[in-house]
Length: 406
Image 1 (tube, rainbow, N blue to C red):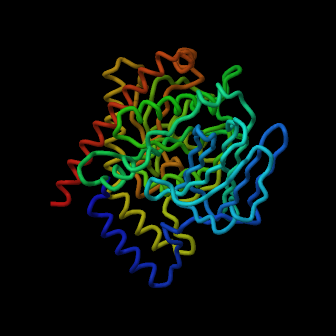
Image 2: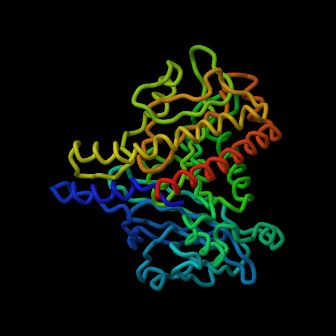
Image 3: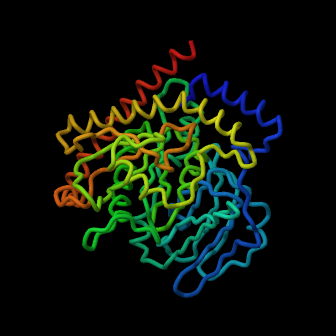
């Protein structure tokens, strides 16, 4: 979806301001594989692949049959000659890397000599260097189990997907949504009995991803697809690398004091809309704070001007999405908080150039909310409401931008 006219002004002003002495990293710098930090090894129990990258990038993993292979797609990654230098372990018949069929993506293909499936696919980021590490573990499975899990994700389906990518902004209404399941790894989030917030929102986010993909109008990327810790700045970086049209962070918190219940949608504000929102923002933002726009080395004045300009465009769009979500959830007869639309200073919403919201699907500290979150039928109803709200927002947003262009 095309950014509004203000984005052009923002980009032009960025060039002017940065040329006055602020040295910023380019938004579109191509990620590169770091050969000395990348390796593949195997034993009878499976194969381990580690890839060191100069920066985090969105990636996806899937399997294909005839011949059996594991495919890892990256949102543009330069491999160099690393694949040609490898000694392949037992279980890997061949390895090749290059551009994917979908424009803007790169692909690593591991041809298997026996059926194997991924059990771990995770990315971590070094907060000091900004470099990323992807780890993939494959374990042997039966031929039947392997074939049952094979298939190309809709957004990786080749020429049709490429056409959809290039057609964005041409009136087809297709958008990219980044879903951000909160917490993960060493940060389990809220706890209720044997349940952790990280696990519950991971399940919800995967199901919502599938529901959004089924519309045929939405490409979806998760900031994490397993129980791993992803720093808040990395989540924002992944959204920008994916050229996201929307960023939705999903949580199910608990409040130690007072009672909270029902779904709530937050947008960014320097001041919280109420005490509960302020408490939640403090819980979420214990990780280091990095602003959404990467202006490393730029002075505070330059960074402030650019972010303020970007938010003139994105803030109303974020608020429109929040309103659409609240309306759809209410119309579906699902439980809403007494103040269902709020504002707070969540770090993960600070991508100034991407409309962003934080959705609390409920509060684990409330027994009824927790029961709802554990109920597959309730989750399906909530996900249907969210899909409807996102599509409605996309249509209205496209109409607003068309007016802006004229």
